[in-house]
Image (tube, rainbow, N blue to C red; front, side, top):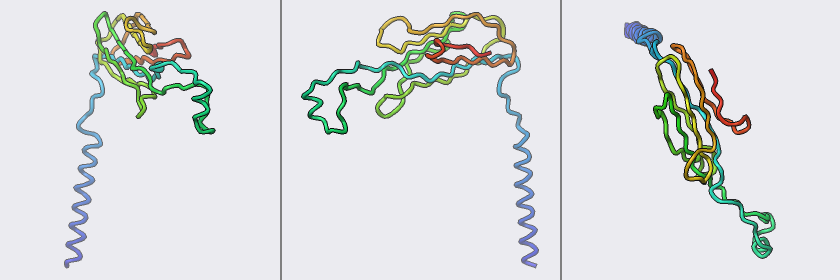
Length: 168
């Protein structure tokens, strides 16, 4: 009798668990993006210039180093912060000074941001500064785009391909 009650209790517990899992697999409905919006994604990972230039070591400094560490140049690893701006129809959507990754601040600076926007014709301006200059930008792209409802527009950055690239 006790064994039968244990089995019935176990069946009821499993059934309740299955019902909860079944409900949450289809409801409540998750809306990724409103049907009357488009999405602009800014996604880039870039290593800015080094904070200081490499310095040539003197013969005495090289001789003081252990044999396996001897090299002609001393190049600090730390990189500059990267300034990124995104404007849509002359409205500033994103402006951030992005720090380099890594314990020694020697890695890439990474940005991933999403902006729901109204569909239609827009002027988009993307700017990036990765050098020690205090004004202006090293890379800039201005482009007129047409966004449809539910469209995803991605903005990527690769130095090898000339800078910013808009993927529609």
